[in-house]
Image (cartoon, each protein chain N blue to C red):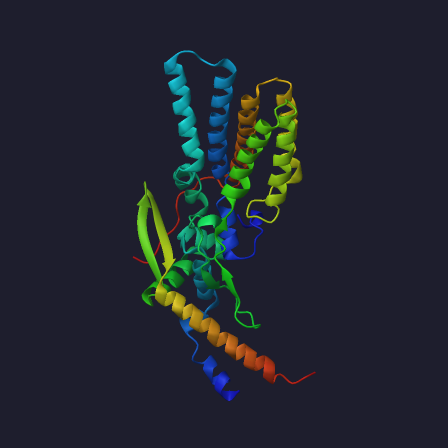
Length: 108
Length: 233
């Protein structure tokens, strides 16, 4: 039990943050999406999403391609293999912790 | 955007997003209208001039390829001008028939690993295009004027039932014009082959109308605005 609780502190904080987790899980499902779609889908503000995307890109979890469609800037985000691996590891870790927690709950 | 997208998972929402503006239906519908109209016209009036025949054949072939091959690319071209500047881009859903069952974790569920196949997929080809084509075969096989209303009624039932849980459901009332148009076509007293193509024509008009209605609502809800995106330089 204690070991599992200690594992909480070892969670990948980059992934653990709800907005970033949402972005990663979303990109895992749709493969790629642009800034505007992510913003609308997640209900983020422009600055908030921009900050989270930058952090995820710095960590190598997502790939950002900036291009133009005519005069319109298009920022397309894609989950990288490292991002997918981090997300899977995080899910496994959380699942283990929650399972342990459920098993150790006193019967009421 | 969200108010229209009932599916819960991101993959299903992305698949539904492909149909949010009605453009795929308009493109396919126009293809069917041109193909069906072209063939009905040439069966009814049977032009003698080889150049007119060649023109009809070319038009028919173009619309055939628009429906079966280039429809998605053309929809994407239109979407990049209409939809993506308004509500953003997401990878279009792949056809379910071609989709490899890619496993993904989408939940932190506690009851063991929950692995689901890729959900950003669509059955548009098999549940819409194929149904209209199948309806035209049925109208051609029943070698009587009653064949068209029977075929269109069957198409209406199939379109409604096959799409009930799909990424693009149709309201029951929205498929009623199909049998009504079939009954109208019955009184035109066309030949057997023309009946079959008439079913394609009716299906195309119906699809285009569905798409146009969606597009109108979408454009009204999402007026075009200047792009606001920005990212750390």
